[in-house]
Image 1 (spheres, rainbow, N blue to C red):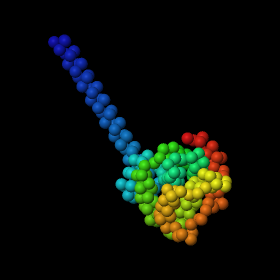
Image 2 (cartoon, rainbow, N blue to C red):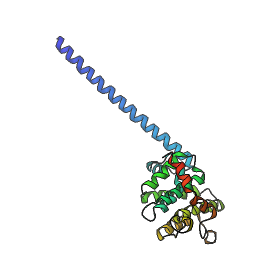
Image 3 (tube, helix red, strand yellow):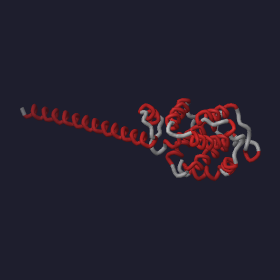
Image 4 (cartoon, one colour):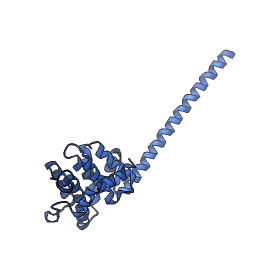
Length: 220
């Protein structure tokens, strides 16, 4: 009888342990789910987007409330990759551009942008940028769109012309023009408003890119 009771006690303890482990695992999963929901909600609030499916795509792309600001500048990474590889000059100019665009203190956004430069983004990211911008631009008038678009265009042109030529300013290849045209269409930029070459501000970015690159490398 003693042996039987001892055996039953061991069974009860084993069942209790399994139940406890299952309960801990359940609470852990629940806690993780709640954390993800909070992160998605915060991301939606920061983006100002009410499309849950779009927020989900942004979240699954690895962006959060801290780094999503980099998404506006995604075409700059695209144009750096347009030739098939990112040269040191293009990388430095791209980093300089986003620092000039007030992202210098947003370390998560810079890290995300550097990740796009280190590994060529998928075509899905390009579509995500398009859908994100369409949603964001709904509440912006054309004058604001033009201002943002021209600034992005100048940065992109500086990167496209970063290799070769005087002061590192070279020619724009066909693949780079595809990205420039995409920016033009997205922001509704009129042809007469477009820069014919790199602006003085963008030229300054291109020629001082190394300084920005060294600064941003500290947070890589």
